[in-house]
Each structure stands twice: as structure tokens, then as C-alpha cells.
Amino acid sequence: MNKSRNSTVSRDGFSYDGSKFYTQVSCGSRKHQIERADANYLYKLLTRQGPRKDRTPAFYRGQLIHYGVEPSNLKTRKAAKQQLLAAFENSNKKLEIPEHIRQIESELNDRYQAEPVYEVETIRQARWNQGVWDYFVKWYNYDETENSWEPAISLKNCLWTFQRFWLDVGMDNLGGSSSLEDGFTLYSSTSYQERCLTRCQGNLYEPEEADDTGFVGDDLDEISAGADIATTDIIVPDEIEDLESSGTDCSVAGLTYTVPGRLQVAVPHPSLLWAVPEALGLMDLTSDDRYQIVQLSLQTQKVNALQLLYRKAKNDTKEVSLSNVSMDNISFDTKDSNWINGWGNGCMICYNGKPAQGMLACSCRFKAYCMQCLQKLMNDHGNGKEGLVSCPTCREHVYAVSKTWIDRSPGDNRAHQAKKAEKRKRNKDNRMLAKFLRRDDGSRDMTQRK
Image 1 (cartoon, rainbow, N blue to C red):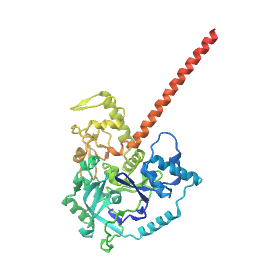
Image 2 (image 1 turned 120 degrees about the horizontal axis):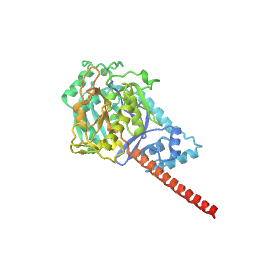
Image 3 (image 1 turned 30 degrees about the horizontal axis):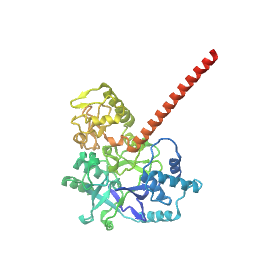
């Protein structure tokens, strides 16, 4: 499905994409689109105790704007949380959306429903911009003057095109995005663009494509210059077991994941899990969010993410570390108890020191690979097997999962370190208390003997 509505409609700093309301928050050079959190969930976040994973400063600053709490330009997470908590206390713990913001949202919804639907023909370029990829889109049945730059989140219903774009330009570029400078640009090949056009014309047989929306490109209105696009949301099914995959389209048909306190996000098809979440338009996810999304995605193909990725990888890496083996110039750290750091030992195929960026969803041992080796393993098998990787050990066609879906985020690491510090302090206090009690018992024995 390559259908998209023209424009995430905006007004007075708020925007709407057909399913979610956002406000824009700037943090340094980056701009974040922040959804409104449910008031009950927000209050629990503000009042919970103990070292737990917290949301980003941009998240809390965005809630100040969504709920009309002034001042809304606070710079730190602590100040924003204190301001929100004070607003809850002043409203008897029932924070309401101001009427003028409700009117803005109602108008944005009306404007969005009036927008026409467009079809993406191909992706011409990808540009690294302020920590995310933007995509230069050619619209089907429109000339080149209507091409426009679009964020990844706007292409969530166009990931057939997205997947093949990255296979065309090289997945190693996607894996190394953290070291890129703003303005770095990739260009798709002519053969890729021609294949996308053939698909739009209906001359390319794709088994997964069974969508019939009645779309007629010639009847579309003119695309406004510089407009964003948005896509329709997907309804959550009652039972995951009843899902049927839509082949290698952008997402699993009918499946979404609800981020706590936010709205739903589409669960990507397993063939796209080799890509980093941000490239798929999935921003500001906790490690728990990422795990749930991977689990749901793989479960549709009857793959157990817990057994094949998390638990198995943890045991494999610990076993390697304890054996203190050395492969060529790669030495495993015997003191490494954090299993994900074991990936720094390098790719299990080329052993050339390149950092491992992905693993395969199969039961084979020692299955962490660099992006270049994953690209070599990725084969376009056809007949519904697009996006599968041929495992070099078991020769099965399985899915690749990027390390970023599994790794801890900086916020997760901070919460983990705080939890460990609290545990050390608690153990120290318990030891001191036990020592005091033993000394006190000894004093009593001496007194009784006298």
C-alpha cells in the first residue's frame, strides 16, 4: 500500500496526521513531534517513586503545551515535571484540555478529512538531517516539479518502497547513520525507480499486494508546495493469533502497538526489522516499547522473539565471555556481564573489527553481524520471501533484527545504573545494621555473664 494523504495539517504549533495530535518541541538543533499523553498516565508518571525509566524532557515540555500549562517554555525535565504536577494539584488532579486547544484540534480534524489521497511512486533520495532521515519523494502521476522532501513517519504505509530503497542504496549506510553529518545524501538507482514505477502501473506482480482502495491518480488535486503527508491509522485486532500477514508490505495488516500514554503506532513487518526504529518513523521508544513491537512483529510469523533473540543471545554471549576464547584478532571480555556489549567484539562472519549491528531470528549460536555482511546475506527470493536472510549456519531463510531494537537507550542505562546504586546502598545499610545487631547481642551476653 503506497497511498498517503497530502499534508499533516497544522495550526498554531499543533499538527494532526489523521490519528494523532502533535505539538513541536525544539531541543537544541533537533525538533520533536510530541503526542498528547493521557492525563491519568501523565499523573502516574509525575508521582511514581524509585529509579525508573523516565520520558524525555521534550515529552514533558510537549505536555505543557498540549494542556495549556504556563509557562510552557521550560528547558529542563525537572522544571517541566514540577510545573505539570502543580497544574494537577491546582485542578484537583483532573487536568483538562483547554477549550481553545480543543477547538484547534477539531478544526485540524476537519481540514485533514478534506485532504485528497496521493500515491508515492518512488524515493529518489535520502538525506540525513538533524538526526533523522528525510526522503525525496516522486509522486505517481505528477511531474518532477511536485517532488517533495518527506519525513520517515509520513511513509509508514509506503515501506514496500522504503525497504527496496535501502536494499538499493546499501543497508550499511543506514547502520552507520549515527556518525553522519547533516546533509549527507544517498541516491537511488534508475533500476529501482523503474521497478517502483512498474509496480504503480500494475505491471509488477507482487503476491502481498491485495489492496483495492479505488484510488485513481488522475483525479487528484494539485499537491501544495512543501506540504507534508500523513497516513491513515490501523485498527488493533482482538486476537494476534488471527492475524494474517500482508506479505512484505510496510506493516502487519491490522496490527498496531499502543505506546503507554500515547496513541497507536503501526507494527512493521518482520522483513523491516533490520532497519533502525527511527528510520521507520518510530521515535522516542523505550526499550520495553521496542521489545513489544519486535515480539508482536515476529509473532505474526510464528517466531518467538524471547527465545530466539533475547534469552538465546544473552546465554550465547555469556558463554563466549566465560570461555575467554579468541578468534583471529577478536578477544572476548571475561568480565563483560552486560550481554549487549559483547556485540562490540565484531561481526561473526568477517571478524574484521566492524561493530555488529544485527542478528538473525533463528536458533543458531553466535549470530551477530555487521551491516555489510547482512546486506550480502539478504536475498530477494520472491514468492513472499522478500526481506529474508539466508543464515550462514543453518541455511534457513530468517529475519534480521537491528541491534537498536534490543539495545538499551541512554535513558534505560541511567535508570539501570540508578537502580544498581540504590541496591548497593541498601545492601550496605543492611550490612551495617547486621553488624550493629551482632555487636549489640555480644554486649548483652557480656552483661549477663557479669
